[in-house]
Image (tube, rainbow, N blue to C red; front, side, top):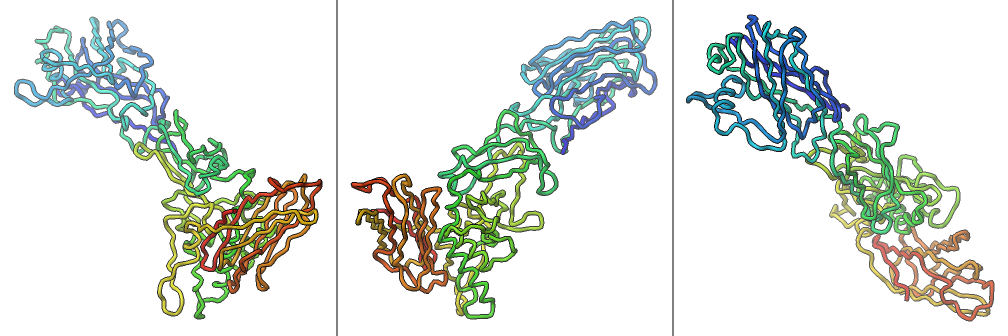
Length: 571
């Protein structure tokens, strides 16, 4: 995980008689990280012991990427030498390309001095990103020792975020150098030194990056229809990623998704090129978890189970076209058996009926959220590395600052509260003709149609009668969540008039003052009759003159034989 910082020193540098070299390099071992200290040392190298009594050279460093801490002259064999260092911030040396009509390389430090610093017309430019330092050494008694450190300069590696630099190449650079022997320090003495074509470049070669570079503002986008109403019910945890799609055991960051359905990091919370693992969940305190699985999900699940039961060798095989996406086989797996079958269907039916002791593997207020999530470009496509395409890992880079994650909930077959993946679609053919047919899932995902619901709420012989009158035809199932004031009303009975073949249910959640009533013919052979189909009878706990405000509808849904949803408009 640690990022590598390499400094590459090119030698030889300045040559006297083709053998004298000026070197600068770092003394610590890589890799480095933002905030680490790097020490750059300067020294001469010589193969023929060329005598040097005077030297002056100029180098510059990138002050956006390096912060100078201090410097120390070493010169272990030249304690009597005079030494000086001068600094100027906000300047950069202009490399000379030709001198006397002859090309000059940046590495030819003598010619850069002569044609640049000494006789150049535009020696330095104002440039805020760079600082120039000039080192002067003069020895009167003995020549400056080669292969010994002249100077050490310590720098702190700075975060390159918001500097305009995309890497750490060329942090420092030798600009020019003048070297003489003991006879004279004049510029006329330079020609006898034999400066050759060589120079230095101090580079950081980037295999990955410097560890700890602030990634800047990173945005993680939550993709799910649930965020429209419940964004802040989503929680996140971020870990360091390990392996292809794994995580460490410690949480780096955690919290709630914001009202826009985003998780935004700034101010150096995340670093470039680090791999992070995102866990998305819905808070178990969310009040809407029981509404994830509805009568439409139950109907779709039953049709898939029926289709699977028929097998692949009958004319009816595959005719239901229930599932459109491979991930629905995960979302519909409510009892963790590994297959979609009638047991899953009855778990879903039992949920909306209020049966206790059901499987713990699907989303409900009892079980909490059972989450499926991952990067949207992978979600839904199962591989050996990503179970049903759940890729949890993201890596901020210089060019990628935003990541989209999809979220789904186990049990949400119709994607009413879940992200519909871009990938992993299944091909459907129906009937014996082999022609493509519109699937039940496709119809369920369409915008719900609206139908009027005629509600009458009357006092009859001292009791409150709530009558639900349907106008919509061809309904294969319904579900109504009704809230009432339990300080004033007590439920006596629920009466059904939906048709002789229709399976009805009533779930009284007394602790929540809620009644869920509905019907479903999972075999889709019968539809609910119209007119007055459900009646709830309450006994008042006090004398009433009217029933206004005592009963309200919290949730309504119907489903037709083709899988399409109906939302009811209370008249």
